[in-house]
Amino acid sequence: PPAPTRRPHGPLSLPADSPALLIEHHTRYLLAVLRRGLPSSHQGLDPNRLTLVHFAVAGLDVLGQLERLEPFRTAIVDWVYCLQTPPPPPEHAGRHIAGFRGGPFLYFGEIPDAERSAPPHDQAHLAMAYSALVVLRTLGDDLSRLNTAQIREGLGRMQRADGGMEAYEDGEV
Image (cartoon, helix red, strand yellow):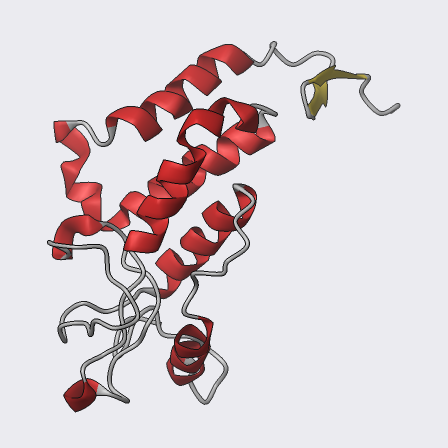
């Protein structure tokens, strides 16, 4: 059979017989997710909030609506960086993975910086590092605030001998 005729919908191209994609409807929903945060019925997802931001930002990009984030771009980038875990204290060096936490649920206080050390329970998660990097690059960040050396070292320690990766130190594979 011949290939279906495609009609453009922003950056997407859908088969001609598919229903129209409601770009504005989806855009408003994704912007609401970013502006309002989690509704009370979804607050159990707070440890994964960074992943939800990743899906919203990536969704706006796919819909060709990323420019709608312009008023919030700096705030989103700053928020992602505040989820970067600081280096471990000396007594936990070699047993603590640097990277990104999934949300502010374990973090209270000032935005972390390279001079402050993390408490032992404040560890990064592999999926959150991925989500953070995708959000930052999608929003055009130059990654200059990224703690690259410590994240790279931590990722190396999370790789198992069989090539698999642990999601967090001594965590699921």
